[in-house]
Length: 110
Image 1: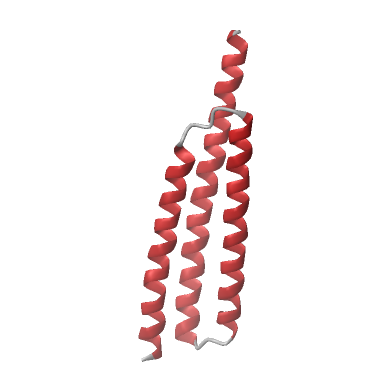
Image 2: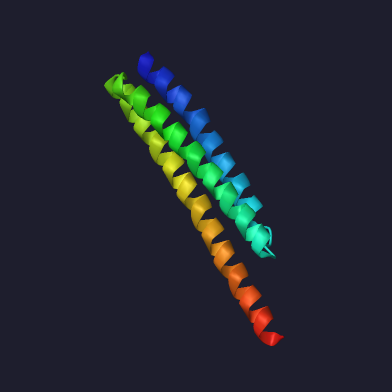
């Protein structure tokens, strides 16, 4: 019974993590047009990283006191959150690089 409870708790959280990742990706896709926008994007990434670390530490504490079934569910949740974070971070870095290229190209045309 505890295994099904642990699995039930994992599914909504994984879905929440994926939904948050999709929302963050959409936010990153907005065009960054200035250095101030790049700075804001980096600050947002830093906040997301801090939240990821806090969530990860919380799950690590839960992992220590969990049964084997719960441990497996927690590990899966940690992995899903890690993948979502990596996707968002990669999208942000790609967007920043692309926008910096555009800025350099626009400056070269002047």
